[in-house]
Length: 544
Image (cartoon, rainbow, N blue to C red; front, side, top):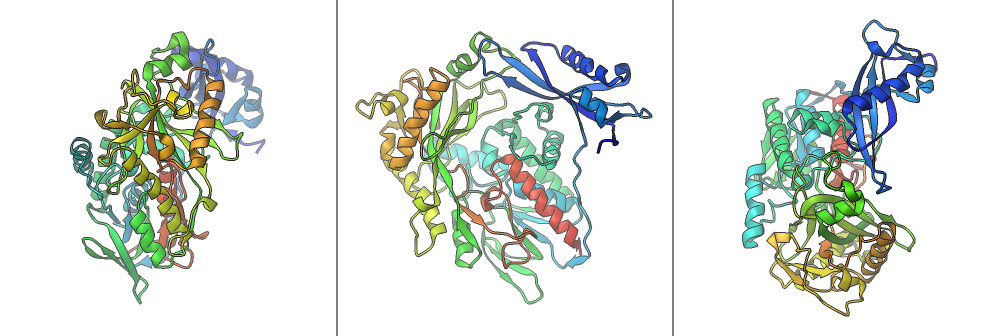
């Protein structure tokens, strides 16, 4: 409102050259605030957000936002004053955790320890609900051992791997916290991660990332805190079914026995295929949804840094270069996804005799290669029903590609790779990787044709995308860059339908949640969806 007074404001668009000291950035913001007619000497300024504008390689800039706070006892800022300063009012987001009237006769059960399940359990524990949190996989430490065993001996544990276990798939990723959703709960997510050990800059950088090495500690601390607040954390516990009892409570069937609970939050990961199949069999409202499939592309990190930052490559203000491309000129979109600067391509299979790739970076982002997914849009009409079910057909679509990648890689979990030069040359030549060495499983690969793994439309989209991205950033499609297949787990292939009360349609007390249920896409947005479900539960119920 025009006559409302604000205590804090954000000065956006403070553009400065790379290397500008923070004090100079704050002084530039203060100069803008002088237009308000306020004595800036009484105001407090701090760096709020910082991003890199590398659209012009010869003029790379830091674009910053600065938070300006008025001291206690001062008048503050009117909307009219802030408009003159090109500043916006800042109103911190707050979580609404009520206390409902309906008694919850048994503890809530949260299925899945990814971001959605973690944050839902965190808030319910804080409100005294003593939630039970289960996951089919291991704790972080044991999960790391399982991943290393697969990497070294190609012995896959289908229950504890890069997809399943404490923290979900994000634990073995770059720990990117960037999200495109505009929700005040995002700030709570970032602040919680910071309080649990994430670097302070996750609340400042426009593209915050934790790094898989640090994220593992953050996840473990959150789980410890949930237990300290009265929650119960159970590993190696997979949901196999559930029954609604006459008193309205539930009996959840798990691999560790039955669990009595007052409600069930289905915070499934995007790879919980057997759980999807169980829910479809129990007539929950499940529909197929569009996904994307493709490959991981690897370049030398130094090449990507130079390609985007030129002579400033290696500057501490910039770090390892990031990029994002998309092309919508064809009948299907193609885009880069989950870019991991200074990272590695990891073996992300969760089912035997399949090959799946994903990207991972540590906090330092200092590995030899940088990688990203290049994904092509898949439509629902691309699926073929299985046993009359199109959702099952969506799952089968992913499996076919992953199985083809396993066979193309030599049937020993090696990854099929092809140089960009050979792929764009129409497969007329087949060269072994040279300057860019695949990082998957320490170099366990087999030269193959990507077109033998992907559907024809996806291979065609990949070809178009590479050429398009190279026009936008000449040199991107360098011939010795390497493509690894198959990237299939960009999102869940199904959605569990829910109503305005966030319960599954026709299933009161069952709450589908997060990325695996089809309502998020990434760590932060999944965490936000978990928070939303916790808010709804707290508003309706009181703990027994």
